[in-house]
Image: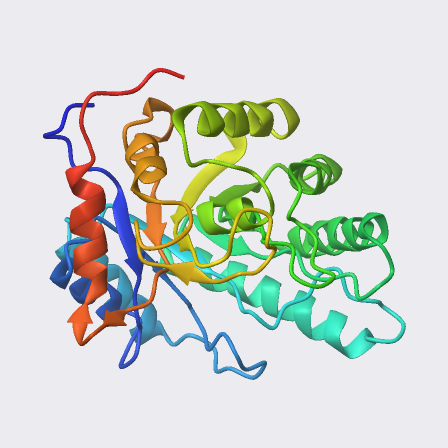
Length: 295
């Protein structure tokens, strides 16, 4: 990939006023990829997609060819690792919501749905992983579409699972259905204790991920700097180069041939001192593309 090649690079965009508006908003800030919520991420109740919504979304996708990749992020309410006895209703709502989101993605033609694996609530990480695997298998068993579920690495706040590469391995490996993969979030893995600030550190961390999970499962990257220090286990995103990770790591990722055709999505704050930071962050990342680095 040369510096003239346009990377799959974008941000999470609002769908206020209609799902189809994601494309015009992405184009407006210079995206070639966008991430959206297909439903309200903070409410359980939602209306089904209408034929008009589906048609307008697909029509807009065709009319905005500059957006070459669309991903969906799952609801923040979903907890696949919750206790099925004390939190039976939460488990029911979580699995119903995940199935609904997969079906929405299929209707809209979105190839990937990114989900957090959830929190075990004190039962232990092994138990939480077993619960997540069982529920993912149950949902995928009811789903007939092609959208792939991507398990996102997490920062490890509270009793959350997914902050160790072994957790991602055990979830992906435990699910027999192959419509599953991974999304690496730079802020999350750094906050979880995986250093990526130097070329040597990044190479070591990616080799560890490849050895434990397999880079072949990575279908999306979230590029976020971190407000928290290495190993702080807090999920606080910062603008590129303005956090504890620094510019160098992102330059190396943008030039890593293994990620050349993987969509890279910003989830950084939208504004700073009244400035549109999506465009600034995207322009900065785009300026980093150049000769491919070795492993």
